[in-house]
Image (cartoon, rainbow, N blue to C red; front, side, top):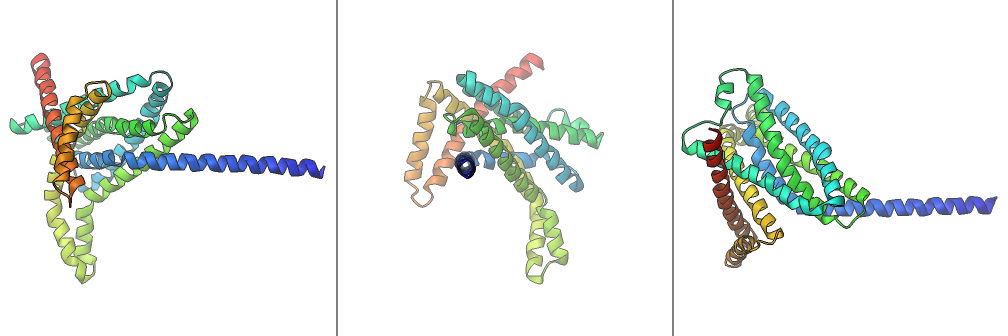
Length: 308
């Protein structure tokens, strides 16, 4: 009896060790995948604040919460099951689908640029702004969630590529962990950005004397910073979309555009030894942005001529 109990305890201990090892593997894989996707998180955090510009301050955090909830729905109800299905039966389809999303980002960013150049506001929002605030809020949230779908898909695709050889359950757990971590990270940063002026106002009124000046600086500077972030968000759509198209074309066998851009970026980085990585990234983002603007403008103009 005692020997049977000892054998059972040994089996339980073995299962516990196996489970711990599996959790360690999942944790390590999620950490690697999250690190590789961090660049897209920066882009996502740059894009999102543009959707709360011009709205009532008391609605900023509720709107960000709605967008974050939409982002989680995107990841868990749409991207995760599709990614696992494609990984199992049609991995070749992941790149073309990402390129379609990249094309949409290019179109949306280029359409915004063309509207700025033409002196027009974003289609559909100028009428809403003068009408029902709830409709404006819903329109902004809807646009942000659509954009998040493409950015989230890229994050999840990067994570999936890192665990493509793992069992399906491991892939699912890693993608779920990455999805939650990235969503909390992105929208936590966005919330801090858009509420920085309120933080500054609190410091200016109630903070220590040494921080009152910092608070006043935040209050005065954040409207300008938010306008700048709106521009950066549009630019991020173009460079992310253009980058997806360049890397997608490279994956599909048309490699010279991406290779040329990467070579130019590396060459520039080598000539700036104290900030080589930053210079290389900036130049590649610039090239990707030009590609995104060219492709997106072509689609926007074609849409205008065909649909009006």
